Length: 200
Ligand code: HEM
Image 1 (cartoon, rainbow, N blue to C red):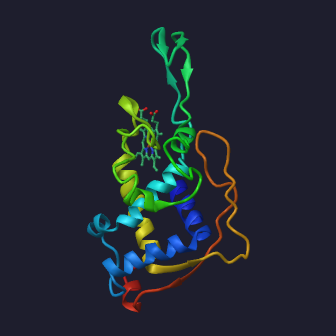
Image 2: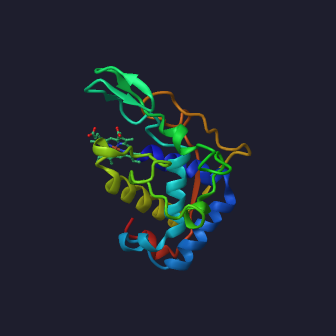
Image 3: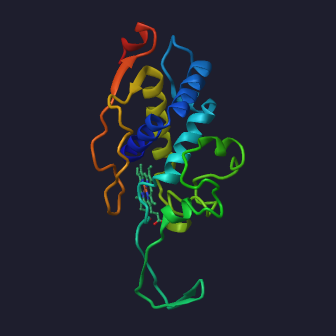
């Protein structure tokens, strides 16, 4: 969840018009006189689309987890021996240009228009950040809920700015988890009525 939140902030800082749209939605749905509550998340369709688009471009587990083949079988025309480890390249699937026009661009809008039926819950095989089938991630709802709620609170409560003139460095670590290599540095300042910070 932390890894995804970090990539989401990076993508928004590198795409300021999308960040503005997210803030407009928060101001329209919640206003500046109160904090986000969990029950608001359903109304934040653009914010949900931002999280999906981040999971598409930067799946935190780009190779899912290794699956061991338990019986000799044929898969996609290949004969595979029992005991073989199968790694699924989730990132490659999530960014396949056959399914995703402008496949490497950050365009959350697609999840409200052309791809609004495509979900991340293992039913649509062109987008598999949580895997699929019987070893699918059991933390989907918890993970998504945490990411959406923290992101909504951060963007609603604070103006988040890249202090450098350079775009945010998007290099990531190689490994089972694809995390940002360098720390993300941001400047934050309050954007709500002062009473909203009393309980924080
Ligand atoms: C952005 C958040 C998350 C992402 C993208 C994610 C992704 C994944 C992926 C791709 C797998 C492998 C699925 C497969 O092999 O087909 C997995 C497995 C798993 N995840 Fe997550 N995960 C996330 C958050 C969480 C959270 C919050 C929890 C627990 C609270 C969790 C618990 C697990 C467990 C226990 C497995 C192993 C399931 C098994 O092998 O049967 N995950 N996750």
